Length: 383
Ligand code: UDP
Image 1 (cartoon, rainbow, N blue to C red):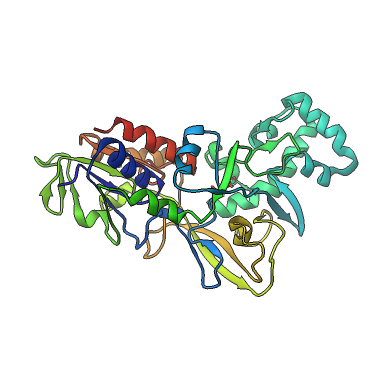
Image 2 (cartoon, rainbow, N blue to C red):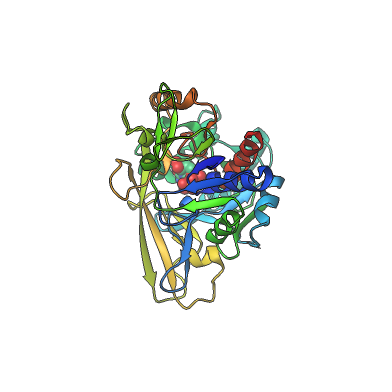
């Protein structure tokens, strides 16, 4: 029998499985409902040889030394410099809104406004847009209004179906106003894309003594969870007393008995063009127009800059309704939804050795580095 069963082959599950096998000598079964490993970080060459990210663009960035070192065991890095521009009525503006953007938008007034921003918040500061909006100075409010209307409002309405003021401030706080001339989207010390893609990281991580990978396997088909039963966990009908590390959607494990946990989903429309480049940057955000939020051109991310043609993807956000093929991507955190999540969490609370890990299972946003860090910490605790 297995010492641990891990549900989900994304970073949360894969790192945990590897750590338990390697550091604790455990026998681990890791399952995934999909036909491949890697979760939403799964990438593959498309029919034209361009490395595409099937579930949307993933760019690794971190300040956490141990996470960078850990992943570097499994890959070398392509030092992709991730810069994003917003397409604002046809004009391209650096995003996050920074001092270069200020110059493009305000021209001659920019030096004065720059001084005002820096006097108030300090050089290099990352100012959340909502904080800037609430400032008493009229000119700072004017900048805030511009950024709100041209960068955040429409994009956020598309992405979340809600206005920026209605969404969790942690969400829009991820893209602050940046008081520097650094056009990179992230300012972390380590940034890059795995040289051969993300998928080989997972293959290497899981190709280890003691780890068994089972794909095309739905958690609820093999696991029966009932905290009040004498045997709380059954695996394929047999009592299981080892660890369960669950990284999937908790409501679905319980057939959504209290109602569905709300998530945002995405539809990805891939397009191929017989020309070297489609757009000026790896990612262009459409912040005032279109029904999609952004277009990613993959050759920038993969470094295949010499390829004669190109593949792009447009992202269309939509409500997650649990339909076949739909994927829950983003938890919609607010008081009601978090309370509903708590109800599901209580269903597994009393089960010893049952651990919830990751975006879906914890109903919160994680970047890659944060979930790798969390998985490393959790697997140290697990016996
Ligand atoms: N956002 C926005 N305009 C942009 C970029 C981001 O309004 O051009 C807001 C939007 O609400 C989005 C959030 O900031 O959901 C976080 O953006 P991020 O790029 O971190 O989103 P992710 O890559 O996780 O989808």
